[in-house]
Length: 197
Length: 203
Image (tube, rainbow over all chains, first blue to last red; front, side):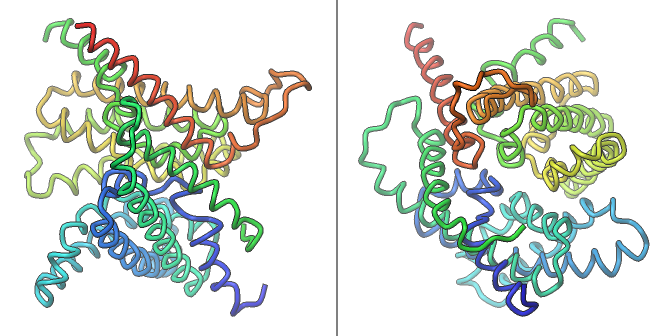
């Protein structure tokens, strides 16, 4: 595929056909626990998108300029986690210093993000699929937007669900999983639109 | 330490304190590999190894770790064991390593590992923590193995890659695709919770 188009293809694939949540099950924990309110879901989703786009790019640089030359690839798990944790911490401090409104809107979600498996997962996928720097950035951004889309849809559906009668055994996570299953089926409709390995 | 204590610690995560369907922890990193029984088995063995040994290690170090940086230390210990799993798998079972891809590394962010350390290993003796970690890993493993069993059997008519159902069986392709994982886990949780609710109402 065309060198300029490939990052864009990866970007759209990460949102629709290879949605990180609905096809790879990554980021499920916070997806299930936070998706009760539309507003908080949007906050978390935006924070995840931002952190994903930037940490994937940083991890690409660290991996290719630090780990590969010294043949320390096996340390990538530890290094990626440190980069993510450090970046989240840094962002938290910056936001707290400069924008109080944003801090109260996003601040509470930032510690949650460090343990969100989607962040580490995207960095690991990027290494395995041997993406270039630009592609990695778009892959991170697209994955984040895909996650945001999924959690927003879920929160919208769950708000409607409050008035519905659900069998007691399915309340909470059970019904959320079934909705996620239907959403995954709906997203399968996108498959074939873009194919990336 | 009474042997009864060890038995109690061992049995709790297998039943009423099961990490998956009671606490809904750690499904992210492993649900993705439940479309094949073999992958699930290898993956859950990795999780058991990591939970047991990192709980044990943290429990030994628990008095030496400053509480301010304990999360960082815990992550480092977990990551070390995950790297061991990753390297061992790459050396002895490269095809499986390729198939599992990034999911081995994602054991680090599996909430069960960190959850057991925070909730149990920081307050208890090493042997007991080892038992607790192992049992939590097993409680997690059997749920996922049941899910994988149905997904592979209904999705392809095979178990461990061996044809079980005859040619009359029409494979449910949806089972091995992503939605199948969501549905199976939800159905499994439904059945187990209904059973727990029934038990509760009799008392």
